[in-house]
Every structure is written in structure tokens, then in C-alpha cells.
Image: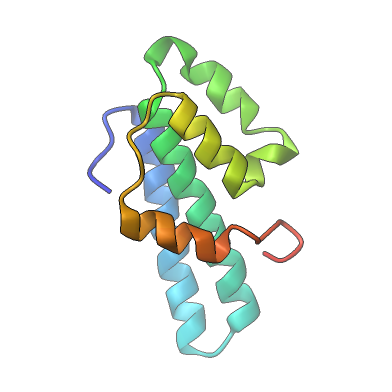
Length: 109
């Protein structure tokens, strides 16, 4: 993902990168449960970064507030919000990878 324009999106992208690196470190030492949890968290943060970057500035606070609800952990909901905010279609490779984790939920992460 290119560097987002929105400062709120940059924060979520930074969190996504940190969680992914932590997941990779745990995977290296075969701590798969923690790795899966943090990888899911990384996906969630990356989707939120995309959504915030696609959201007009005047609506970002409302979008950030929506992240407090349980649905904000749902990848399908985040992707739908991103597309409805006017975000471009996800690249095919990213969409394919998202299908792999679409069935995850907070109890699995």
C-alpha cells in the first residue's frame, strides 16, 4: 500500500505493519496462535487504513467512531465500507488474499 494521504490512515497502516512484523516473529518461533491473532489484527488495521484514506475528510471522525462497534472487526464489513466510500477496487492479488481470511472472526483471532 502506498503511503496514505490521511493522517488517520497512516496511523492504521503503521499499526498494520507493526502487527504483521510481530506475527512474523511469532511464526518464526512456531507460536502459531499468537501469529494468527496478530496477522488478523494486521489485516483489520490495513483495511481500516484503506477505508480512512478513501473517506472524505469531513466524514473521517464518523468513520473512526464506527470502529468502536463490534462490526468494525469484520473484514467483509470493512471492505464494503471501503468500496462504498469510493475506494478503488482492491488489486486482484489483494482481493484473493482477503478471501483466505474472510471467514476469520474475533474468536478465531
